[in-house]
Length: 388
Image (cartoon, rainbow, N blue to C red; front, side, top):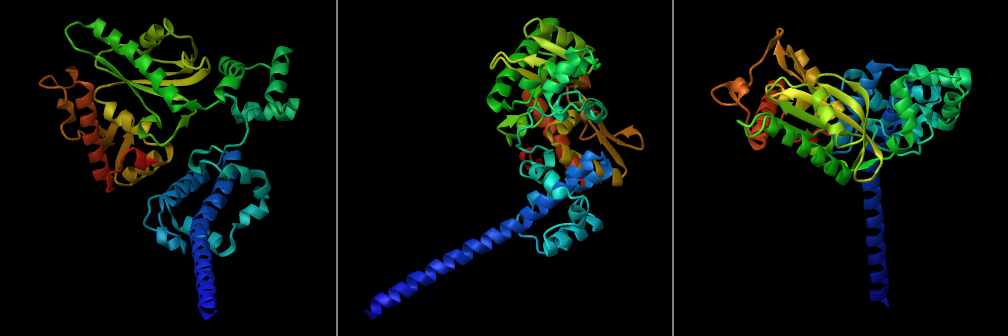
């Protein structure tokens, strides 16, 4: 009997310990989660009033806290992280002590925006069903949305379509395209579909590049950009393609060639940028397509810019700015002069950037340039995946 009682006590003790251990883990996770949740609600409020300074501050803080591997017990633990200032540290301390921020109660934000903090906070997506909300239509900015709501009491996509059909409102060509294909555009694009469309487009474009000059193996490459190379997302909102060429061709010529094989809608088209839609040969859905064309010299910077993630890009540009540098998709500059990193002007051989190199060596060179940028910024090198 004594042995049985001891066994029961031992089992009960182990069960209590397991519960306590689970509670400690949950509390550790919930502290950081609560901070992210509250900051995300406030960020959404500042987005609603287009306060870009506050939006950027909250985005940076959320980004850094998501990457913080330990339980935050006081805001000062984050003081050395880029983008975390004194004001944000004080807000984090307030959240740890009270579980909220005064602005939440003052502006009654919890009921308005709490649902928006459940998903990917740093990128502003939320996982809620927004397919019939006019704010989500491609090309619909704050001005037109406000007018539709206040003047016409339009709250849904169907409301707007009826108004347009009855000639009560006028929309731009881009807005009409966004409205027409909205039902397709709100659907996420599976990674596999992005891969297949990218492969078809790059295969066709690169084939045209070979035909244009028989003396060279190729003078035009295309790469899937955006979040795709990082592999962090199984779905995306659009398809980003970055093209690099060593001649003076225009993106308009490339888009014209694409349109002979695919159905496309053009929203904006210049010599180096295309914004539009493509009808997917994989799913039959219309997908948002962004394309950029750069020269060989600028490719490493364009790749860095278009694959690193919005918040990471802002952080590293701000760090470099404080050191006297300007970083954009075209290059790194100091005192308005381009900085030549690691002899980049000679990457193509004896004739420099005018000699094209194969994809493998182009990406190796790009990685070298990226590492130099991290070094100048005083940061440890991060892979594409680590930048999200």
